[in-house]
Image 1: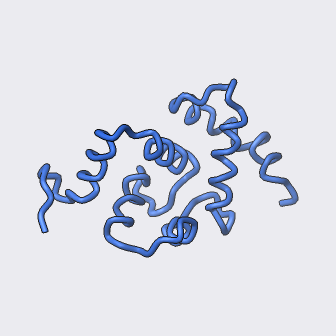
Image 2: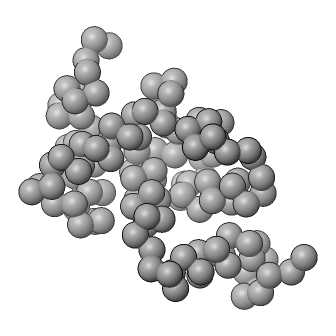
Length: 122
């Protein structure tokens, strides 16, 4: 509503996201990185609703819907709303981008192992 992403972030979003940013290690000294995460979220939230839908998620990454990509989205969607809040999106992207090789393997197993048996079946 006439505000730039930077103005909205400074006035409204950053105070609400402070705890989220602190939880992933982006403290006050890393304001530029905090803003970059929020600006990326705002870009993915193409309709400006304040939530990232499954369609926006697919469109932003240029990927086709599959069972795997649906499960990745669900992994990020902690409240099962079928949309990602800024907090869910930021923590999900941060985790995904900072996983060790071992953690990425575990994440992949968890995505494919829908029955949570510790194995992948056809």
